[in-house]
Image (cartoon, rainbow, N blue to C red; front, top):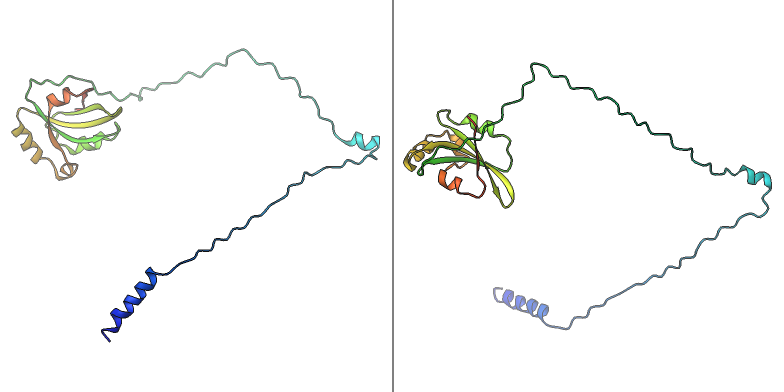
Length: 187
């Protein structure tokens, strides 16, 4: 029985490989003949039936346009409406070897408030706008440290939910040397 299986397998494979195969290709063509439709008009119409056919009426003349401008209602300001203060662009006071922690980078300038609220409030927080491939990107920067060791300590002390974003240490000099840095202090 063990010898029959390899022999049968050999014949099956040989049958698949050898032999002439013929392929029959069938095509079908249909030709449609399109005939124009001709309309016949009854020639025995009387004047009464011709009068019953409505004639197109000319359009009425356009109405003249008023030249007076309507008065716009003036917006009413209440004492309760105060615009939110815009963050002030302040130059970062650095003298060379300063470091910061980049917490997150976003392609929009919305939603930094949630991230800022999760950060410890003892250090300054900045938003940095930079152009990457012609598109604006916004980075959230936390703290200003005199050495890389101080920045590492602060990085390890960050809450777990902030560490989940993958923050890392950057030198402030490298941020300022980028093509279009716009650092804005948020707190």
